Length: 279
Image 1 (cartoon, helix red, strand yellow):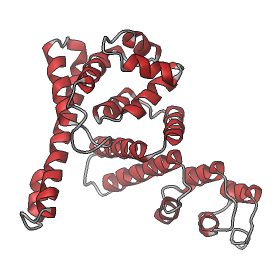
Image 2 (cartoon, rainbow, N blue to C red; image 1 turned 90 degrees about the vertical axis):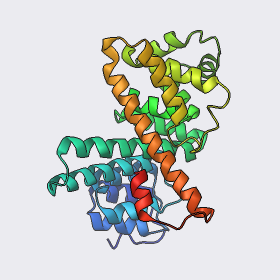
Image 3 (cartoon, rainbow, N blue to C red; image 1 turned 120 degrees about the horizontal axis):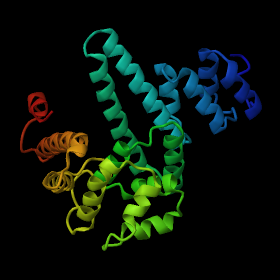
Image 4 (cartoon, rainbow, N blue to C red; image 1 turned 135 degrees about the vertical axis):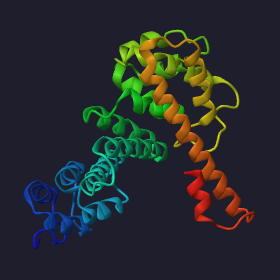
């Protein structure tokens, strides 16, 4: 701890503390503004002590924290919350894991929407290397209108230049998308949803829904769900279930936003019960 608090601490010593130091030592290191700490060391501290609130608070307060490291902290927080509610027997383990996983995905989409292009690319790489870049997360990004994250994800998975991916995805004829989708290794069962969501995104008006690029777009989801239901074979049953869950979530978000707008405009007084109904 004495070493971690020294002024002008070089990155090599910071790396050693991050690797073998106690939680208290790492906390002192993070609070030392004169210490030189590289991303690898920050990631190592997250791996070892990201479940501790004091560590998370200090790290999230850093302006230089990369998006990938922030997302790793979100995962640690989600895991901690799931373990807490399960140990208290407030929720069953499976439901707690599902709820916290969905919350983590929402936070990841929001983080990507607020990040610069180079940070989004690094975030996508982190998600792939950590096994989080799933078809469900990529579909959520598309249904949220976050085309930048969707394009980066497909480009990374398919190992195709981003410029070519953008050209294929924005081609109104849809030429080449199925081949690109298969090259990315995404499951065949979710292809109809991606196809219909892309068509909906190309239509005028679907992009201008509330929530910017961090929240699910209700109209896009409903359009995608309707099209998939009309031609759905038995094997995409889980996909339809996922889309219905997304539609319900988007409706709740819209209700919350509507309540907030009414309050901000002074049309109604703040009422916790109103937000409870929206939830």
